Image 1 (cartoon, rainbow, N blue to C red):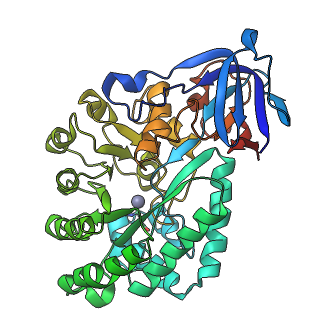
Image 2 (tube, rainbow, N blue to C red; image 1 turned 120 degrees about the vertical axis):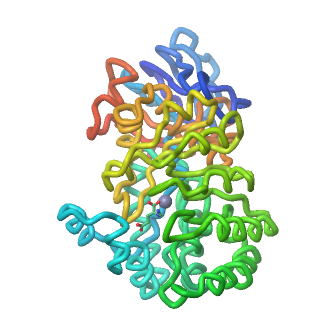
Amino acid sequence: MSSLLITHIGTLAGLHPKETLLLKGKEMANLPQLQNAWILCKDGLIEDFGTMDQLPEQLPNELESISAKGGFVFPSWCDSHSHIVFAAPREEEFVMKIAGKSYEEIAAAGGGILNSAGKLQKATEEELFESAALRLNDMIKQGTGALEIKSGYGLSLESELKMLRVIRRLRESFPIPIKASFLAAHAFPLAYKNDHAGYISLIIDKMLPQIAAEGLADYMDAFCEQGFFSVEETDQLLSAAAKYGLRPKIHANQLSVSGGVQIGVKHQAVSVDHLEATDEAAIAALAGGQTIATLLPSCSFYLGIPFANARALIQSDVPVALATDYNPGSTPSGNMNFVVSLGCIKLKMLPEEAINACTLNGAAAMQLSEQSGSIAKGKLANLFITRSMSSLAYLPYSFGQSQIETIILNGKVQ
Ligand SMILES: N=CN[C@@H](CCC(=O)O)C(=O)O
Ligand SMILES: [Zn+2]
């Protein structure tokens, strides 16, 4: 395999040592950097880095060398919450929202998740793969270098399997790590509207065994929310998933204080996601622990719901990650650069905190931080080079404008 040398890097950012797997509290504001640097990638991994006055004399054969022209080099974004496999966008709901309808009202009127499920059930695996691949290509161009994708628009054995197989094919076809979460507990299908127990047993007795047998999921997800899955139902689902070794990453406290955070912590969730409606009890449940609070500020932005209280979480030593939540209903955007900007502007995170939340802690929220999320020897060489910027803060400050010039995945310029 060939090697890549990047020289004249104005700032090489995100140099957390390989052993640092997760950041909490004050550590979140520390983003180690090196000025006037080079980095060498070999066989898809980061081989070494240093300052320009100490460029190595001995370099590998078959070396490609590029100049960063004074730009920053960052580890790729690690987007740990997305729903990019869907059959159709829902811009009709966007217009309903503009006219004043809430997310809950649109869902009650036959829109929302059930609308997406109806369309997905009719789509072929090929169609779903093609459309998700287009979205994923766009995300990669915007700097994403590791991704979690959920099922959850199938809501039947056949269609959930179809979604998870599409995610598997994306993983096999794209040069970035991809994790899959099983989210049949996203909404109750109409046929089970008055038979919640029936749908829960369908998930536990039919879907989980087959998904586990085919190794199609890394995590168990559930939308623990009023009008969706109760705490008791979520508890039952997470206990069943644990028998197959699937740890939770769940949707909690999006629209109301649902108790989802506490049930996630009880089941040692890798992450509890959303938390727009978080109260003190939820923060206390997470304080000082290992469960990551994954905040999704572009969902708050799009739906016009409150932004999560990132400051209180960080102050309570809760590890915070940021992700896109890319989906057709609540967040039709997979742009992590905008997430970093919203993290700063709306969640009041420092640029260093927001960048750590989108890199190392995002990787940790997919259990990938041994290989992704920071610049360290032996980690995946998934990076991006920006234009020359006056400071680190310029990246989130210049919201809506991409500063990214070059994408590098597995040590190769894309
Ligand atoms: N809240 C649950 N799931 C998605 C929205 C799904 C949809 O509206 O299609 C979310 O994370 O926001
Ligand atoms: Zn989501």
